[in-house]
Length: 57
Image 1 (cartoon, rainbow, N blue to C red):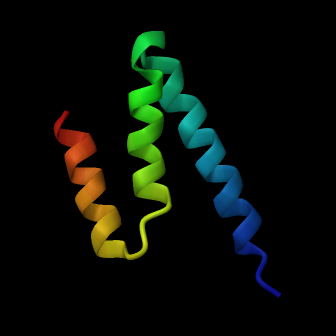
Image 2 (image 1 turned 180 degrees about the vertical axis):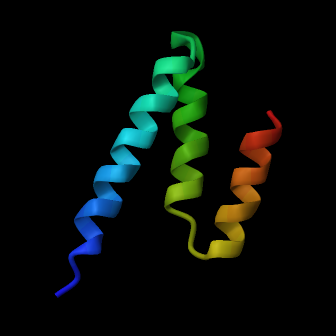
């Protein structure tokens, strides 16, 4: 059994909630799309590339 999976999901939810607390309402859609591209990337390399683009904005 893998007990880490629910913790990872929980951590992701808290991360998103914390990010949205700092983002103005009009930018939440853009930030949500960026985070989605990071979380659902098909590989770690693509996720890191998306993260770097997000970080540089």
